[in-house]
Length: 316
Ligand SMILES: NC(=O)c1ccc[n+]([C@@H]2O[C@H](COP(=O)([O-])OP(=O)(O)OC[C@H]3O[C@@H](n4cnc5c(N)ncnc54)[C@H](OP(=O)(O)O)[C@@H]3O)[C@@H](O)[C@H]2O)c1
Image 1: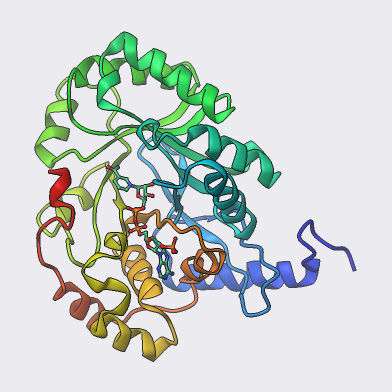
Image 2: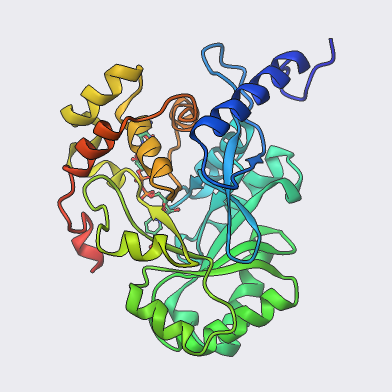
């Protein structure tokens, strides 16, 4: 029997892929395709693939990825390498996390081809402006050890956004970035950007989780060309999210954890999520969300958990 790189038998791999394809056909989003494959030597883990969403410029982005904030140094290298080994293909970093070198080393260590990955980084506010954006981008790809980024985001709507966006558009046209977007922008701030932009932001990465569901902005984004991506999809564990009894009761029905219920909820709302963990079991757990579906009632119950306010007031 031919074996794949991780020791998984080819027959099992194909079986897993077919199962995931069926799951996507049932639960999937319009136009979603498979992206990468989830590999594990953990006996309890069912192999699945992560569906993608098509961004407004035609680029395919995984609906579930791996966040890396605070994963620095050796922990960063190990976590990113482990995440890729169990199947994550979308890796989210940022200049301000100070871990682009570690993330790059983790990517190399994983042995996965660059073109199978979807790498995001973000421009920090200190580098806003036309010239400084080009310089900061060059530093970022140099630190990551890659030739191009799949997605580059303006981290916060501060400074010379117009100059920054022009530089990002040019980098995109030059083939150095596949897609450009923003983070922490309000609907109004995106409208302002669009008044002079040639390219519409493909993504707005904002705080979204069960306790802050962005119910005002959500329908506006759903009817726009800008895809929502959730940062801190678990609210970083705040407000007892992993022990929340309402989420736990829903999870019991499907034999799923609070973390899995949260991520499935993001997926069913059509929001890309990038959970972060340094724990390999959690990495696998967080990927195993494509084999069940929350009912309409479950979605409504989770909707009632909304506190309609940030869980990170210190960042306001
Ligand atoms: N654009 C922005 O302004 C912005 C802001 C914040 C974050 N982000 C991005 O979003 C990513 C995710 O957000 P985040 O890092 O703030 O927090 P998060 O993903 O909401 O939560 C991370 C926490 O959840 C725990 N965890 C993960 N999986 C778990 C599981 N299955 N069971 C129990 N605990 C689990 C982790 O602990 P363990 O390690 O012990 O598992 C960690 O303490 C960041 O890493 C970053 O890439 C962007």
